[in-house]
Length: 621
Image (tube, rainbow, N blue to C red; front, side, top):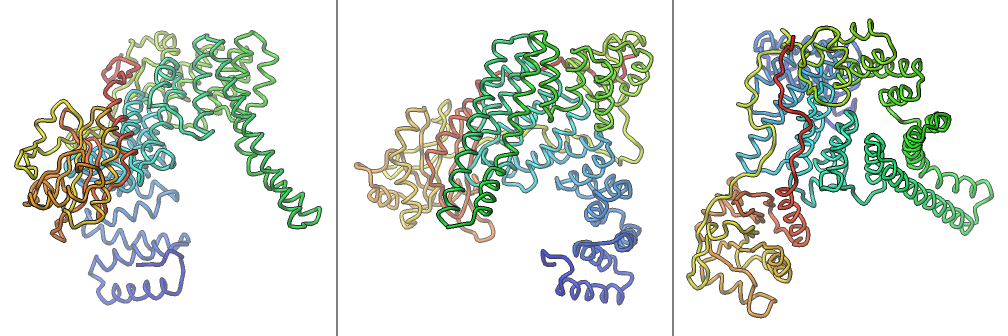
């Protein structure tokens, strides 16, 4: 393989060798494909180099139109000249329909061309393919590379084309997905739990779904982490919602939360600066170096402080508008630098500055070409300031752009007068059409489900050391943790069992039972029980699966090595696997598993959110 650093001697020697092979066998398309791959992979291609690679790959595709080199041809032109790769984007998924990434990469091309409906279709195909694979083979979502990235990108595309309900549904599903200490940890910024919360806030704030912000703010869907950034973003969203719904009292409370976060961050900055100064002086630095150390310490906090100041200024603007104090509102707006232009346009519209509102609405649409909400916002502003003729002209373009949009959201409800003036019915969207260059598309439902869902646990009936049978059926209605361990001879397994034993009462208090499945026979179970550090043996049953049939049914088995694996599973009362860990080493974190089990069970009690009734996505004229 090529080295990570482009243009190294090793890379050049390797590419030269592939070039010789390709020259010696000019009719061998695989040699050309590999040469194109490695020339691209070596990096730093100029225009001529890019054209050379493209020529090579097109020679391959002329012989085999379904060759997988579509993949790196897409990479070749992604972020460079996306339109050059449309033909590969249209075909790649169909060449490898069971591979989610083959559907995902074409989405890059269509997004780059601002064809967001086509991009959303590709990313949805990828998500559905991943879901089908994971549910079939019992793999948790974030164990798959690129899963969270694909789904958060899909949500962004759904937001762009106005599929608000689907964006909410998928964002919530990402938040619901099983969490694990090694992957999908809510603290990290690249997993499903993080992206789900962030994208859910994105869609709710973009489409001004204030009731939904408040109804979900006390649920796990919008629950902030321990970090200041997520707490501040939720406070801002709640403040916007409260002021948007006319509740200035609660809005002021949200502003108070932001103000406290800002004060805490400022105090943290001052403390860091003082410590930096103290250390510099202790190190006998000169006056200039002391000053530099203090400056650098303060600068580490500048970005976060500025963000908090902007967020607080936005809520102060809303408070001033509510109090009918336009001069104060405008003063605060000048301090709030990060407010999106579409939202700024609505604020200036409320303040009666029509010219500024129009200017900002146009700028927002220029930044969001191909997106439903900025264009609808411009139609709304133009109609509101009396420019009905231009509003109707923009609306005509919006009808096609919003072919997939949910209409019952505030920004689209506001433009109903414009639709009525044009003689449109309540559903004014044009019928969606698939572009001729988008490729042959399969039925999305046949690729897989839109949401990931847990898979049913395999049934079992196994004997304890005293011959008593214990089976999954007897736990119907009661959640269950199943630990697969490799017998009394596995010291790591014994460590796991002895870690879970003291926590067993906590699981029981939560209504969750524990069963441990062993590779041992009945005498081996008795030996394991004798090695318990708990008086009287382990406080949960041990059962024998000497044949490994249940290990294999739960995929706690290495088919290549022909050996059992460690496994930990959480199964709900309906017999669905809600969480799992399969590994070469046992899972040793009972507190995490208990918390995650409780979180998974709490999902069943959260009400479903839907912002609009189901509507046919067809023309309404």
